[in-house]
Length: 311
Image (tube, rainbow, N blue to C red):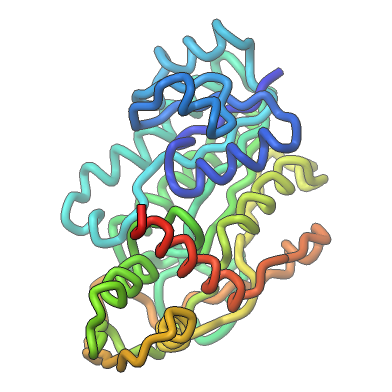
């Protein structure tokens, strides 16, 4: 039996493949991006199919390696902003790809264990403190709505067809190789030696920041956990520690050793809640420990960014 990763060439996917391959799994991937066999092997992939998550490509993987014991589904939209600009594209990436995967599993590999990466964006706004998995969902953006639809599809296939699925709602994942979003934007401007860093929002927005190297350990742990007592479950992939955007900016500036001054516009961005903080009780119940503190994670990110800039 083999382990499959959809979206294996993405930011989280590449780290997950490395984690799984390092633990001795035979890892095969499908998703977007041209990788020659040598590049795929360097990532830890024994097989890579560049294409949609659809029956043809899943059948091709099965023909080569047999049915999967575990499938990690990371393919999908990854940006609130892009979901607002191109909502149907985001729907296709997130919802349609999940529907195709679930239908293939129902037909050919119903005993496979499916781990699905969702997002805290399903929770929406108006949460003043830690958010439990059981709260009513109220997404604010097409991105959040599509992640919710994805979860509903998974629950439907679990209830109707016995598909074994665990959904992990990820919060603010950062780390080496992240080439977009807040940390990338700030470091790009620090590299340009700007005297003043102008950012949107108020700076007081709270997020649950998790290093991608910890996140992929969590995903792997969920796949092996005793949580498979039921066909469907949801777990927050957050640390339970909230840190403001202003603190993140200050930390990056400090590790950059810069005198840059930060100013915030005071205007909230569309689809951007003021607080997204995980109730991490279920993660603690797995005896999972977050190993990379924020200070180290930010320092590592600055070091990685500078190495990329020098290349």
